[in-house]
Image 1: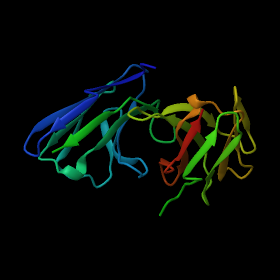
Image 2: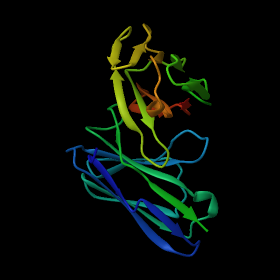
Image 3: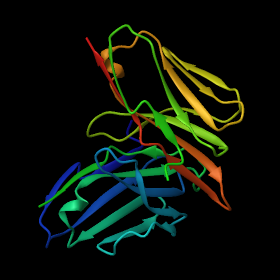
Image 4: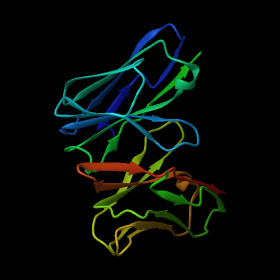
Length: 113
Length: 112
């Protein structure tokens, strides 16, 4: 399944680094999502974009900064992260907004040292 | 508050056994999805159910949506080691705008 791709697949960064996660969907969808998945916890919705506009921000710390230049691409810019931010970051897309079936990318495994 | 309860949280069985996992809520959903996720990968969609009482089959997997659209079950017949993974359910509902919520998942381990 290559409908939703994410890069990099793995990332190790220090707390003072700045890095970006990239997501691209090839499904012609109009909504894109960032989720955080930590061990033994449910998926946590972070951001939702619908037609390039941010429609949801679930009280995410400002050290996470999303960017959606078009309906096919989504970025998550990271800076001054904390070790507790280590997790699997998943991107998803759906035809329209929430309420539609979401299709996930393979995720980026992030480790913050 | 966990709006979507999945049970059991963990299940370890022998190859060839049957199993059922559950996804329960007090909320009514317009649709419900089941995903399987392998370690280090993203969830892969297995099925979407939308009609109360609906039953869908995918080879050895049988999915049922409750009549009231508040719960769902996934039954696997003759489990194989390749069925090992985290099974997630997700429900979509209209709360003044559609929202999708995920359960915490059932982690299945099928032993050879």
